[in-house]
Image 1 (cartoon, rainbow, N blue to C red):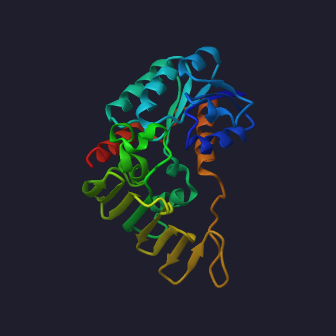
Image 2: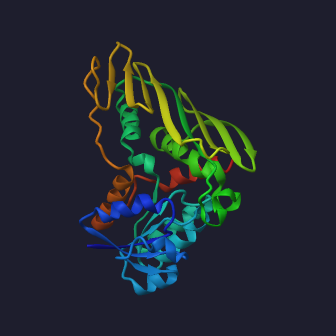
Image 3: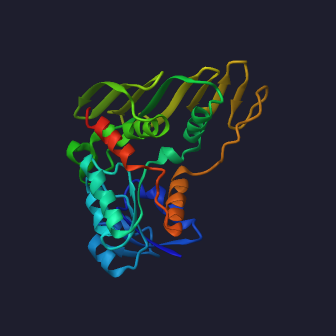
Length: 314
């Protein structure tokens, strides 16, 4: 049974904690946060106000880091120097040089590290990579990816609004789509960027050139709190357009077929996509790597360095 601790009981931990709780071969035994009230909903866990104390007193196999972005790297290295395997919420850091520091610590201590880039485990996005790799619909011709929400007003000490601590929209939202591009298609050959920033909103657009196709991407924190988060994509292949949005994943084939996850009347057979939780998928993958003594190499350090270099150009 893997013993797991989690540090940073804030927004994203609400996606991680249920995943650990559902696993039969792992037990979430301890939580750490400087705000005791954040841990009150979890009375069955041991609670700590200090990561140092938790690492000293608990015999953990895994630490799950859900801290603010600027704390990720040092917390990861601190845990790995104690012989603990680490999964960290994205981004790995705001600084490219931290990638080497973190992976060197993992190698030095013979432990596994992974940053939780969740789109790599999202069935709709995995489908796009699969058909790109196998050429089912021919060459990829173009793509559009969007990720839009409101200005975060929930963060502790308002850290999300501080560029030096969060990196703002590039590192909160755009990182998801850019990381998927690098994972699925490799490093872009060229990038063109535009950005509009004000105190209460941050909007960016980027165009990335790959080998034979271009992908446009948009991300934003808008000022109105009433603006609802939405994300999706549209990829044009030679023989189909693949769309993900409010209607789920739909493939519009060149020969007239319409295929979606969950077929409707008059449409072709539905896509056989697994109905799974992407957060659960990434955590299950990491736990299996730890148990098997394997590197979590679905996320490679060179790809992370490429993504951070591109993000820091905004």
